[in-house]
Amino acid sequence: MAKFQPSVGGWYKNMETSETFEVVALADDGMNIEIQYFEGEVTELESETWAELVLSPLPPPEDWSGPFDDLEPEEIEIDGSAHGLRRNNPLDELE
Image 1 (cartoon, rainbow, N blue to C red):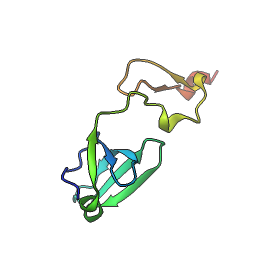
Image 2 (image 1 turned 60 degrees about the horizontal axis):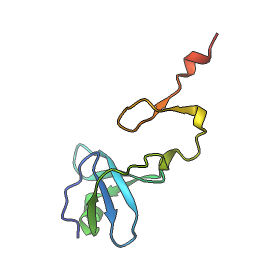
Image 3 (image 1 turned 30 degrees about the vertical axis):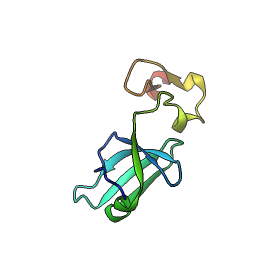
């Protein structure tokens, strides 16, 4: 049973499946929790489902590139931001 209240930006490990995910959004009514798995898949959980999970809190992963594995190196730039990712501005390519 989940002992932790979901918080946006919090990372958790599902102890039953070993999957790691980040809470990316909470519904205003508190009934739905949007999560993103390390590999990039986004899904929504109902608060009742969250309460049934066996979770362990985790620090954010050092390797933030999981959801971006399909990007080429020239498509991203390291800039010191929270996720270390800055997408190229498509307007820079216009003449």
